[in-house]
Image 1 (cartoon, rainbow, N blue to C red):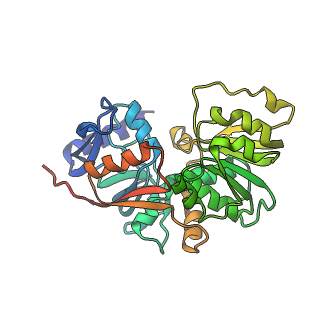
Image 2 (tube, one colour):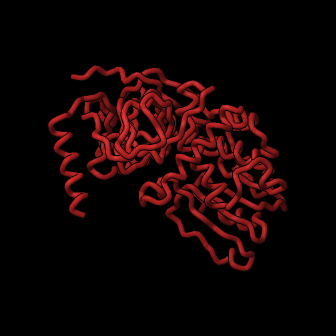
Image 3 (tube, rainbow, N blue to C red):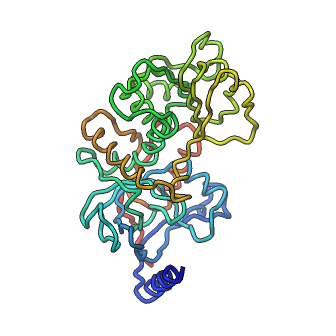
Length: 359
């Protein structure tokens, strides 16, 4: 305990006497409407001082996820004022205990909500959360992938207990609720790699066209899904939208001994009673739980290493759909509007540099 206090004191002194400023985009947790100009603000902050396992990454591209908008709307701990949970960048420096990376390495990661995010030029991130970036993709294509890829991977491996190998789940059937977004676009590709037969829900013509590029057996309109599903049964049903809205349908169409997984929370009670007699399991997936509780965090860096290999091999494709040039408050505001609309297919990315000069 004493050594930890000394380490924290040393770090604070280093920040005070060796602080160097860098550009960043801040959010105001007291402004809930993204349309307001002060919802996101260009500014400057200190270049972070590294902990022993940290990388200092020069951020070159970032993506926006629903978690950004939720944290922006609800506010987070006062010490976190910079969002951003997807990044591609170059390692500029390393902490004293780093073993996986060196200065100059190309990396990608989602990071953690417990520290300032990637909407800053230089970000400190624990090496165990970081993967080696794919070699054959450009920075926008790479930055679109980390958070959604880890989430999809953990759905399949951590929650469903599947081996992440080609044909590891041949013949199994999965229904993905709301599959045209960022997570769905990766999950469908990974599940197809495992050999799973895929059905997915969508509604808009844009979403349906987006989904046709993937190995999907059937696309169902979510407005009349129960009627069109008829008597189909699935080994796995994954909720990428409020599970309460589809709970009765899921119970009706899950196989005995099947599995349900949701990445989306709900304010309504879920009736678990009917699951007992068909021996069905229900699980939550939240990729930040590992870094929130320091639980097996190296598994996320290792997962990103595996995913990079599949991306370079062309087995997985980037889910990039829209790009903004320059990272600044105005472009981030436009990207957040797209994500908050709930009608975004795939991912939106902002390319560096951070274009607001330090003032």
